[in-house]
Image 1 (cartoon, rainbow, N blue to C red):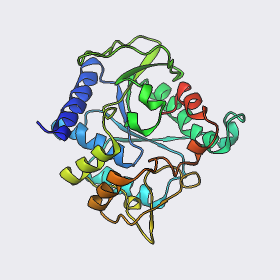
Image 2: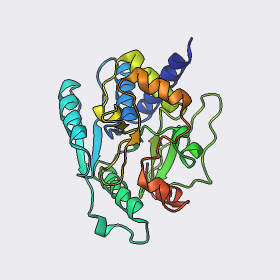
Image 3: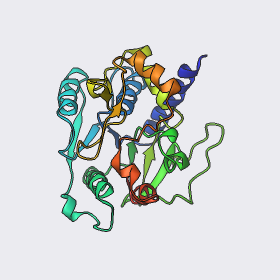
Image 4: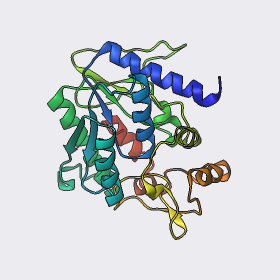
Length: 264
């Protein structure tokens, strides 16, 4: 069994595991490469039909290409899509740096959706290699009703034994892609021919390596115009995947502060 097949099998197992525990599930769709892979895996896990809603928490600040992609593939993939809204930035904690304050709108939007639909599990496409705080995550991560995460009190996960117990005052964040790397994602996209937003591909010497809100996300210099080009670029690059995210260049602990209150 090759590396990608092992990762695929583990992710499918995790998706089926949470579905065996609760049917009140949401799969988050950011419209980026990772969440597209996650949707693809969900189709495989449930034999071509995703048996729970796909949620897009819309900041109204994404790139036009992302909205076009969403509208096209919602129809093509026949997704049960829930679109959530976010509060105004003026309603967000003013002590946060500007980019983090803007990004935190999505956290509040997600909390509102969880309360409205009473979701007991939220599937998110985060990976350990993206950012230091995410490396401390678990496949099944308990959150309070308010979305708070106790980074110092995470359940142990050994030999594919996971803590999936649900209590009245908690929900679970489920992370099927936790062990994948950025390179794994692109290799799988190539192998499975998974569609992605064309902003990932170079135009005029620049492309987006990570997609977020257009006012706080910047492109990188790159000549990679195809999936194969991106894979080759990633094999040699020393630049962080999130180097174009303004939030990651603000206060050192801001990401951990956001995640402890419910950010993805």
